[in-house]
Image (cartoon, rainbow, N blue to C red; front, side, top):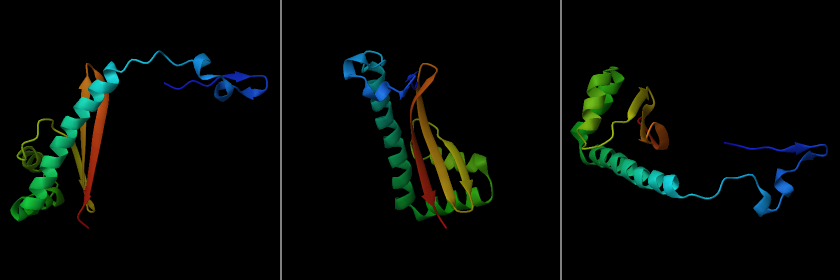
Length: 119
C-alpha cells in the first residue's frame, strides 16, 4: 500500500518527521513468516538447479519436453527434483522460467523467480 499526501504547496510526505509518517506500527510477524517461506522456496529452486547441473539426461529431457511444449512432462521432471512447492512454469525458445510462490492464508507472501536460458 502506498500513501501520497498533497497540500497546497505540493507533496509533503517526505518532509514529515519520521514519527508523523502515516505508516502502520511495525509488526514483523508477516515479514518474518515471508522470509521463512522464501528460504523454503530457495531450497526448492536450488534442488532444481542442482539436478540440472548434475544430470545431462535430466537437462536433455527437460529441454526436449519444453521445446516440444509438453507441459505435463516439464512439470513432472521439475517435480522429480524433490521440490515441495510446485512452481508456475513457462518456457520459450530462449529458456525456462519457474515462479516459486507461497502464501500466508490467501495472501501471497513471497516468490522466487528462476529464469534459466538455453539459447
